[in-house]
Image (cartoon, rainbow, N blue to C red; front, top):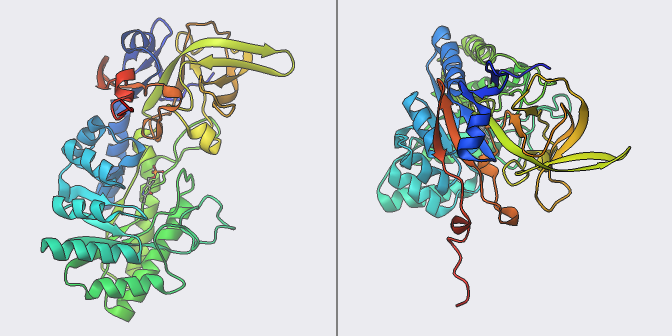
Length: 434
Ligand SMILES: *Cc1c(COP(=O)(O)O)cnc(C)c1O
């Protein structure tokens, strides 16, 4: 069995995360627990940085914190000198609590509430990524009231043909995000922002989708965006200082996912912008990217304890674990695929094909379908790697199951960064009737 490099093995043959034995992790913190290998997050950050530094282009890396928005992650990312994206008042609150400098925060979202916009203005965040006409109004109102100014970036959908490039899912005209370019509404929005003395427009933004494996999609988007820079330079005299190309860099979930090294991805994108800008004689813009899953995803592994089993010969073989859709909704939500390993013997011969299910009252509560595993017994620890992004942040209390604990592991030691929820926590908002 080939292991993802999300997991190492120690001399006893046990899976390790960040140099810590996973069986010890399970024992110490209980299960389910999401364990992060911190060095993996740091490596991804370093690789992205390296590509920009080597290409000698001005850049900013803004972590899309919806992927994993714990205080520890904001702290780690801020320490590494990255900024972050937030998409709600709650994420903004957490980012600030996590020590993220306000000027390094970008506010995203297709329906920012007036109070969320005010919160951003109050905190003097780095920029608002303007998504729609209503937001221009709300932001203007907040800025007038607070006698403030704000930096903004205009989010557009460059209109890439989804038929020819199926991996692109938010760059097309019918996306709910951003201003459509083809119909002329993006230009209208830009004109209105340019006229507004309270808004300082720094540049343009596009995000073409997620879990993209071909640099080609990004390169196409980058070229379209530079074309747009040229067009608006000529038509409106607008100079784009910042070109934000979003996130969506694909990661390994199963052996079918062919990774392109982070650095190569970034290199192709930078090269595309460089050559296109040169062709049009435009000043090279600052390139901003917004990786989410590619910073947090592969670093995280969820550990579960195996419980009950159901076998109907020739029909189904289920093994159930003590978590499921409450800590990882992705398989139920969009048929996301994962691999699973027995923590005690990840390299043991696979003897069965089973479906790993959770403990929630939904038939769709499946974690891994047709999973190859050695024989398992109740009490065994099962590890599902690559669960570091959109796992904990999408977690729920369905069936009143507490959300799991989260630990950071590095150099052989572990540290609890989010404690397991208690039954009491789950009732903390309840007022009851009496
Ligand atoms: C979700 C999102 C990202 C991050 O996507 P990943 O697939 O996690 O890298 C970046 N930018 C925007 C605007 C997003 O909506």
